[in-house]
Amino acid sequence: MLPTLLRISIPAGWGFPVALAVVLLLAVGRAVAYRRRLVREGSNTTFLAALLDDKLTIGILLVAAVIAWRSGMLEGPISLPLHTYGLLIATAFVVGIWLAQREGKRQGQDPERIADLSFWILVAALVGSRVYFIFVNWGDYFGPGSTVVTRFGRIPRLLALWEGGLVFYGGFIGAALTAWWYMRRNRMAFLPHADTLIPSVAFGHFLGRLGCFAAGCCWGRPCDAGLPWGASFPPESLAFQSFEMRENGARFLSHDHLFTVPLHPTQLYEAGGELLLFALLVLWVRPQKRFHGQALAFWLMAYAVLRTTVESFRGDVERGVVAGLGVGQWTSIAIFATGVAVWVLARKGARAALAAA
Image (cartoon, rainbow, N blue to C red; front, side, top):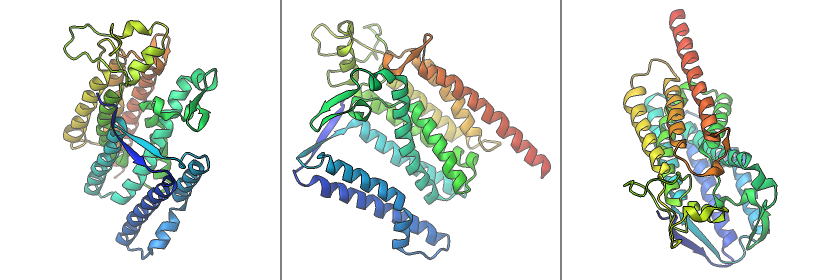
């Protein structure tokens, strides 16, 4: 468990130039990729035209940089921690895009369009995962203690991402809705592209859960001290810090208060399950699929079962519990039902199309 790998230091006065450089690199990279795709499609366009076509994204990034600068966040020396969780999420995103582009090319889909879609999926997933967590823990963000003190003054707690608070289901729902909107806007068939993307979701979630284990979030309930794979988390972890803030939290800490008591490593349970689902999707389901949407439906149903099982070992009440079941388990029921609906309707549509041919 290593929540922070290292810290990146930026001297005073260099914060805003570095932020602008990052925005510039992102804008140029996206414009180059977009122009390459248009040229490959036979459209003769200039780099400037490709850059202007992405003005919405560039505008959002510039506004964010200016807000950070005007608020004083970029004035003094900056020390940015490189968190293991963030590194693994970034790795998951890069690997996921590569996997999806590779399969998309094999299926005759546009790899550059898939890369652009993946960018918006990432943004939507981050927003959705945060919104879901805030909804489940509404009182923490809009009741007493809804603000936190930082070096820049008090800010709303909902902006304090370093405290944790991202839920996969919220991110997946946000990503799915955004993907549907993007594909409809660009006239991309939803189910074939979903089958291309869903193994990347499984593999990305596998890496993400490894990040959760490193950060000590999404932890399990206490287990028998003799369980060989029981995990004890240090004070730097979110699990330890959460227990410290509970009224009866001391019973979840070791006698010397250097670690938590042994807990079920639910992060690793789910990571292993998602790796297995990825292998099944790539090696069995997708190669033998009989209709578009089959891989998506399989993952929806299988992951819902996996998540419901893992949730029974979870110990973080912050995830929300309703009528004895975690909010994630209730969401799993809806996700499983959605998977069944996709399977039935997609197979029925494929049969109808075959009969009409």
